[in-house]
Length: 235
Ligand code: ADE
Image 1 (spheres, rainbow, N blue to C red):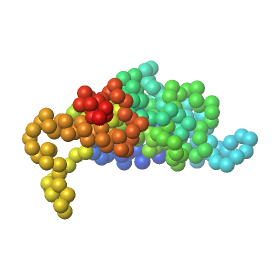
Image 2 (tube, rainbow, N blue to C red):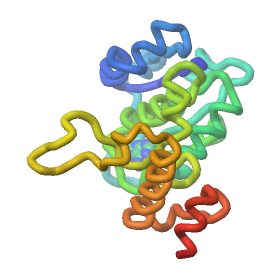
Image 3 (cartoon, rainbow, N blue to C red):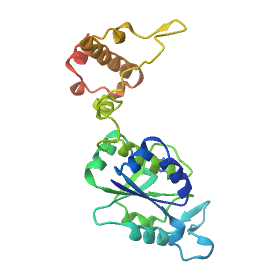
């Protein structure tokens, strides 16, 4: 997958690319990330990319011309053009899975200030919001999209961690424990130390359902439960 991120703050993006799983995915050529500075696409003095809004009102608006020029410079025929904006469709695990299957070039455009000139929307395939709150810009949101899709690309993370994790199967992850076995009298559940795989599996399925029931009951869809979980639910 190739990602192109168009931003006014390339250093924010660059810092994230230099750590952990994303760094390794780049090194292993599983993803490629191109970071584009929007200011390189303005012809105005002082690299101006924004201006006051017509009709009056607070805040600056990103101008359509540098946005379109930057996009035209990077766009490939099958690219999916995504605009990060609080007015977009709310991002979730399903959206991440869908988009991975739809394209091999994601262009992520980060807004700033009061927003974009509305005329830019006709160049965009998808408007994405990462939640119902307003960030100072789209950079963090673009990294959310980059990160959550990258980890779904084969060989980026262990496939087993993806199949067990939260939101896959519409349930939260089961609780996990590591050393020590006893922390200030608080014990790791004995079944996890038993070496009995069927019992461990059963315990995890129960815990997964219990945790989801307590924290996010809205996620529970009966058709996605294991037989064991359906039995538990009916009790
Ligand atoms: N830019 C500002 N707020 C945002 C949000 N919630 N999602 C995506 N982009 C944004």
